[in-house]
Image (cartoon, rainbow, N blue to C red; front, side):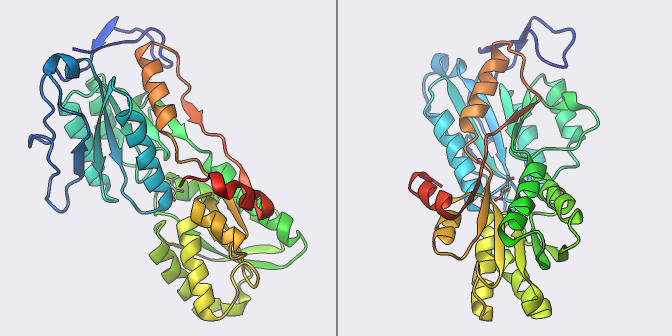
Length: 351
Ligand code: GYE
């Protein structure tokens, strides 16, 4: 049995000396022996642990990860980072669950992880609210929860251990500032906004940060704003509707992620305008296809948001186990890319 020691965790006053947090036997997932559950509405769960003898597997640090889905290139890169990090480290066993964009599936997955007595839960929460009950259940079971990439709104911050991810408000501010820098503060600019998933912290905060900067300049206006669900297909569809209603009255697009910007580029081309020239486009993520679009002159700016969170999550779990005091918010390092800087970065972009 694996033993977790906590010595000085932030927000914790009196601690039990030793917390016993491990599944002692077996690797059952959803009670069906690690097989993916085929019920359409249920989360898809995989157990990536190599099956070994009990003594060996009992020592492993078991991590349950509830992922949102596979809506974007960014998310695929994040999933890969987690699978690579934990899959290549023999001291860990990863249980991976794909919620297919549904919060109810994430809640189910967390409850399964709790019943399996995993050592740590990682959660990329699809939306910000509605997590209190299940996080209380994890807390009652003494299982630390690490929020990954998106955050939650809870009245009691002790319901999760740390949030590992980006500053989305800053990303939104940087998107607006760079747009003004490149287009000129004095230009009259009507912006259409392609928002991320409704209720997601990444969408709410990217909206807020961008809006703050735009509100301070009377020449810049957001004339239309709608969710494109962080997907290329929906980004294209919404952009088509914007072009239909506002056409040449649009000078700029702000997309909350690269995939929606790539969809918008297609819509603009089909409409007969030149993306990146007739309509300025800024997005968030910094994925390889976005850098390629900058190189091709179709996208103007991408604000980086780092999806390679596996190593930071692993470190946080190990630190927690060793009783190291963790930051409540473990931030990732990020940059803003346009022009030659994006072209130079392209060969080293892996996602
Ligand atoms: O920007 C987007 C993805 O939560 C930070 O989700 C993440 C966002 C990312 O689908 O592409």
